[in-house]
Length: 396
Image (cartoon, rainbow, N blue to C red; front, side, top):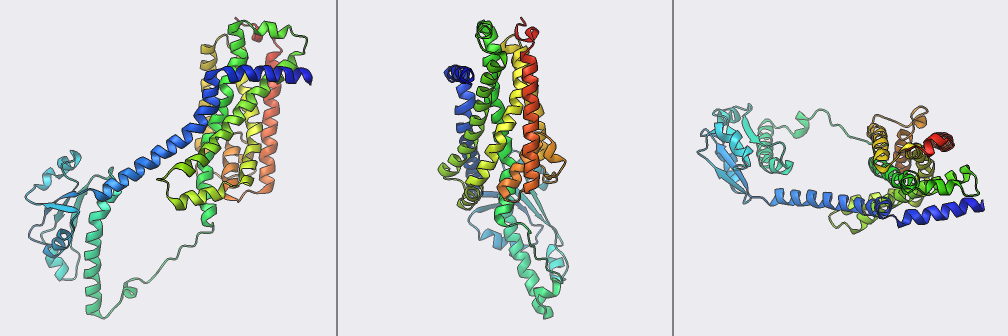
């Protein structure tokens, strides 16, 4: 055991001296999440404010109809109406940002309204732009439509209930916290699983392939300790690096929520409530066997590779293999059950979603832990097998 800690401490010091490893393990996961979240919310908030404050340029072809509607719209000080523009030019003008919207009132609009039928209005807009632009004009038209509807009901001595025979009342079986928990819990694994992998990747390459390139691996192997002790000492550093990276990713999320002024307070408060210490502890306990499983894939590749470039070319496909199950697990249709609890990466993503939502089934949680530890043990045995072959260690 003393030899193990000696190797562990020596390799840990070497890892912490490597700037590239520190960047991938500490700086990127802790800083990247707050940066991404801050930039995203800032841009979203800025675009929304810009869309609300923008003076809309609306081209109108009235066909000598809809004067009452146009008077209503004209009272607004956030719209500028243009006439004498050919509707055939609407598409090009809107695409070129010379106009925000175009509106064509049908030539039988007033007659249809007066006869109690339906008047038609064609609206031209850019659906890829901010939806608030369309909503601002549509709100005025909807207000006019409701006024006409109320006038017609009054003339018939009827009420809105007359034309609303059925009212649907939505009752979500999940509380707001559970709903938000499933939303946040579905996204959270996408970050910390990736960073657990990246955080373990660079130490794995440095402690095995890097030793080959520096010519120091043979020296370590001549030390009066077993090869298994050397492997477990190095592997412990790889696992610790990955776990730290995953923890810092979640910590970065907390920091982002705290320091981001553009984050809606209601959302921030709910997320802070659902990410409580119990949820974080359960997720943390899954990180350890998960990172051991990753280490079991990374270390054999690092042992086999002759240099850093070859190691990266072998390990890079592992990133895609990990990302694909995460994308699948983000689908609401994929649930945690007896089958998905046994699939690596998918199980931790689904379990995290249930943990954060507070709806995790204890038996399924146990099954997830058992499967993760089983895969971790299998990975460790694979590393022992690969590290025990001279053809892999001394491959040049």
